[in-house]
Picture 1: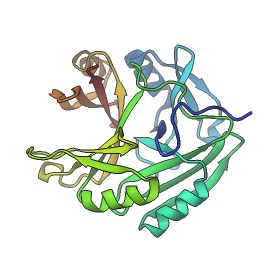
Picture 2: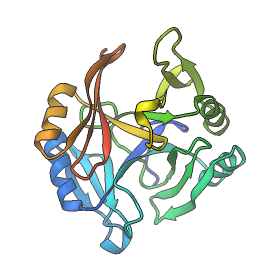
Picture 3: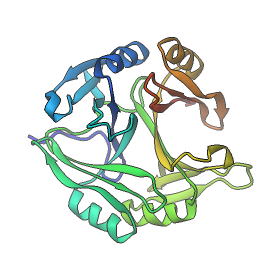
Length: 255
């Protein structure tokens, strides 16, 4: 029987990590978030491993394949028709990185890069509904686009996913919230000169109770600090990298 996704169509639904060392990543993320790891696919299928939080699936990882895949956290958007969404993205200017493909009976997977160069995945659930838990400490809490062409991104994501863009005004660094029916479901920031040489990308954030404490722990466990903890209007965040250089965010939202 198909699983029931915790988020509606066109919302973030899943995240997974490509890692050059599955065992080391198990240890790092297990210590940081309390995740337990369950490998569900053999090495020839990428040693796909689910991360679970209190028995609920929250994320996953696989080995970097043939040295071609960088260590990175990837975000996925819920689609009810991967083929149709991929074609809509293609017509809107995306570069298709992976055409829709079946993942056993779990669902259908696709990847594309938006016209600004940022890659994002699609997941059409079947027996694997995506994350069982989100927005709780230790689970996926937010995804954020970093791009050098926010106007092109706004048009693209509106066309592909129906996202509206709400951009803050009168601030030094405008921030865009992607919205569906007035609900913010993701974000976007323009890339500045300090990010020269960094390609456009989607960044995954995990919810935590204390970004200061979690970022310190990430460093203690072998990671590094990318952006130190700081406040934003809705809470506090930090960005860290795991021991293999995969960046991810830590976020606390005030109620």
